[in-house]
Length: 57
Image (cartoon, rainbow, N blue to C red; front, side, top):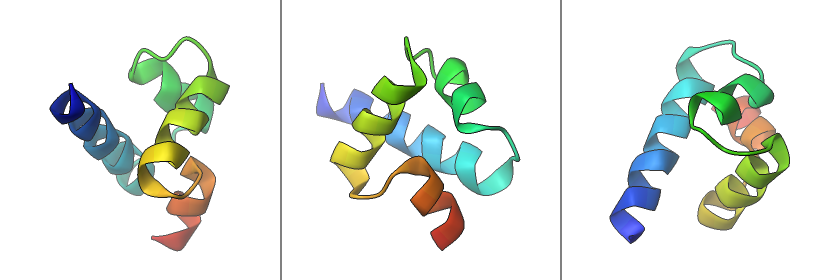
């Protein structure tokens, strides 16, 4: 199951780096039920919120 999470994190990072989609749009594109569940998932696996990651890169 962890490789599935790794793929989702890589896709999220790609969206955050290369698009101007909102966090809500990224969460929808990755089929999360809510933006907050996406933020929680992303933070648990990277140590950053999606917005922090976007601003860092």
